[in-house]
Image 1 (cartoon, one colour):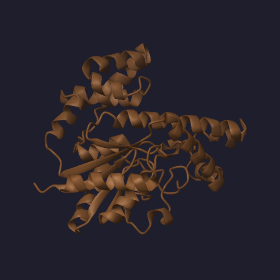
Image 2 (cartoon, rainbow, N blue to C red; image 1 turned 135 degrees about the horizontal axis):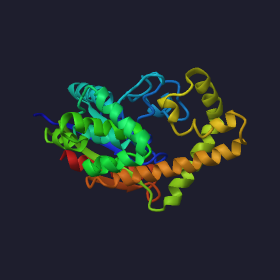
Image 3 (cartoon, rainbow, N blue to C red; image 1 turned 60 degrees about the vertical axis):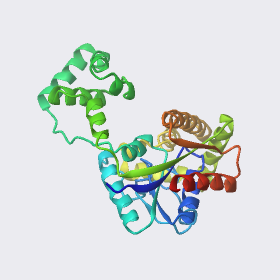
Image 4 (tube, one colour; image 1 turned 135 degrees about the vertical axis):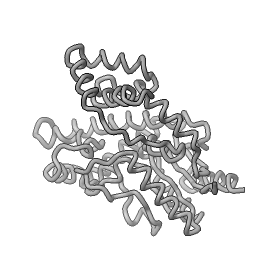
Length: 311
């Protein structure tokens, strides 16, 4: 199987992934494939920090701005379409540069995780929902903990829909979701990645960048974008993006804008922390500290890692 050499840039929000991805694409004749679960949606420019034409610097970007926010879009669909883009880029003699902070999207590509298109079982599902109603969500969460502790660890104990789905898969197929994912990884992947991770030695340095980014988003029209979004789409998956739901109390006249923005900054900092925790599990990442190097130095260090991998 011919491998596709791939550059991957990961890290927390506001760490400079977009900029570094573009610089590496310019240097190594590449095109960017976004691995961001919210930048896929249309009409969500500011909240998702979607790169502008100016920021793209003429580099082609794939998997950005192509899904309607009222559409259901799964990680399985993402993998299928992103892999198609990666193979197309490679077939034209260019290098795919995967850039993003959604760990599940990145892992799905790098580990070639297959998603089993299993039809649901109404009988099993009804029984599980009935049990949750009679005994509480905690009871079936404990059931999942016994059957598939790894899956349970990744699901919030109050997320009834995902708990039920994981148990439904097991009771219908006899295999846990974790078993099925592990089995799919054995198929191997066509990607040969060099992974650059952006972090900060001083966490406060990153948090200050996040706070500044929120202030700039507001200046660029975040509040007006959120108001328009809710008026058009109402409640759906996409409006769970950090940046909209925190502002909703202000839009509803329930609190001052300053309170909403402080909550937005706090939630974004927490999200960045979760992103770092996720990526630190990957021992193959070449970490670079954004508070140790200038933008130019970061590009040089990352380019050196890429050249070593290509040698």
